[in-house]
Structure formats: C-alpha cells, structure tokens
Amino acid sequence: MTNSAVQLSNHLRTFSSLFSGIRQDGQNNLDAMLSRTFHFERGFQLQFRTDWFNALNHPQFLAPNTTPTSSAFGQVTGTWSSPRTIQFALKVLF
Image (cartoon, rainbow, N blue to C red; front, side, top):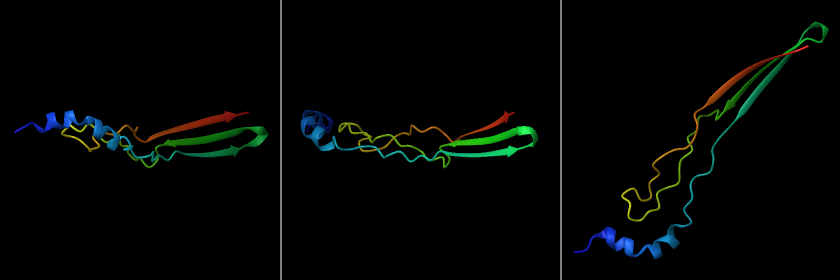
C-alpha cells in the first residue's frame, strides 16, 4: 500500500494546471464620509467631519489553500481585513 501524500506529490504537474485558476473573493469594503459646515458671524466657520473606513465591518477572506498534499486543501483559513475605523475631525476657519 502506498502513501497518498507521496502519490499526490508525484502528480503535481497535473494539479498545478487544474487549480491555477482558483482566486480569492473580491474586496467587499465600504468607506463613508460625512461633513457639515456651520457658518457664524464675520466669516467664522466650524467644520465637523467623520470618516468611516470599512463602515460595514466586512471581513476580507484570504485565498483558499491550493497545495494538494495539505490537509487544509481547498479551505480558506484566514482573513486580512482591518476592523472598522472611525475618525472625527473639527476644523475652525476664520
């Protein structure tokens, strides 16, 4: 009886052409910005701004494992996305 990992390692030429077209999911990211300017007397202005990066907090998955001899073959085992980030800014114009 032969080891299946040894058999697969001898046939990598056929696997490489079959699995070369596997790609990871596209980006699913939404960034948003909201700004409001308040006008006061004598040209004084106050601007409030908020930026939301990855506003819906969607994960970005890595590509599946394409190593035929791996026990995790075909599985997506991680993410690379950053968490939702919110920033606020206040600007005074005079």
